[in-house]
Length: 475
Image (spheres, rainbow, N blue to C red):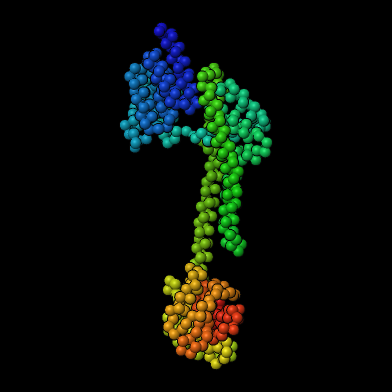
C-alpha cells in the first residue's frame, strides 16, 4: 500500500470513528480505529480518536486504557501537539486522590506544550483543563444540553414552527450529529397539538419550579393558622404541580432516545465539510442559580417552620385548675384526701402536676354517692388508648364485678376521650357506673350510683357535668 493510500485510509477511518463517537457507539469506534492502526500502521489521528473513544465512556478503566493509547502514541510521535494536548487534558482532569501519578504528569505535559507551541490552540485548550472547573466536571449532562438547545431554539426563532424547521434543516445537513438530531426530535414532539403548555414549561422551568415550591411552602405553613386543614392538601398540590414536569421529562427523554437512534443509523454518512454548529452550553445563568437557591431556601425554611410549629402544637396542652364546688346536685362534698387520686389514676409519663379526689353524698337514686378523681398536668402525648384501658382497670379493682356494659362516650366541650362502664359493688350489691376521661391536660374518672334503667345518654351527661364542675380551663 502506498503512502498516499495509507493516509487516505487513515483519514476515512478517523471520519468513521468520529461519527461513531458522535452516535454514542464507542465500542465500534474503538474497533474501527484499532483495525485501521493494524492495517495502515501508526497514525497520530487514529491514536487520538482511539483515545477519545475510551474517554467518552466516562469510566476509570477506560481512562486507564486511554492513557496507555496516549503513551504508545507519544512514543512514536513525541512532539505531536494534538496528542500532547489530549494527554495533558486527560491527566489534568483525573482525580488527584484516585490517580495521583497521572494527575501529577499534567503540569509537566503542559510545560512541554508551552515549550513547543506557546501560542497554539492546543495549549489554550489544555490550559483550560488546569482550572478547578475543568478538573471538577466532564461537562454538562445530555439532559441539560438538550434543554439548553431547546430553550435557545424557542427563544431565538420567530415561532415554534420556525424553530422546528430550522432544526430539521440543520439535522439534515449533519445527520450523524446526535445533538442536532435530539434537538430536531425534541421540537417535533413539542410541536404536536395541545403541547403549548409544555413548550412554555420548557422555557420557564426554573420559574415554574420556584412558584410551585413557594405555593406548597405557603400551604404547609398556612395549615397551622387556618384551623389545621389536612396535611395531605399541600402534598396533593405538590404532586399535581409535578405532573407537568414529569410529562416534560418523559417527552424529552423519549426525544433524546429517538434522536440518538436516528444519528446512530446514519453513521456511514461522512460529516459535511462545513457542519452547522449549536452554541456551546454555558454555565447556569445567575438568575437560574438564584431561583434554585431561593427555592431550596423556601423548602428548607418551610420545613423548619412547620416542624417547629408542629412540635409546639404537639407539646401544648390545656391548663386546668381545680374548682370542685362544695355541693353538687343536692349532694355535699366530703374530701377524701389525696391518696385515692395518686393510686387510681393512670398517669402516662408521670407528668401529672396535681391530683385530687372528692366524694359527694347525701342524694338518693341514680347519680347519688358520687366520687371523682382527677390528675391535671402535661399529657400532650395522650391518646384514646388511655381511656380504653379503663375496662382493664375496672376488672382488676377488688370488690367490684363488671357487668359487661362498656361503651365509648361523648367527651363534651372539653374534648379528649371518654369511656363508661357499668359494674356492681360486691359488698352491697349496688349497681354503679364509672366514666373515665382523658385529654391532653387532665385524666380522671367519676363513679356514681346508676341502675340498669339509667340510659347511656344520661350517664354520659352526668359524667360531663361532673368533669366540668371540678375543672376550670385557664389561659
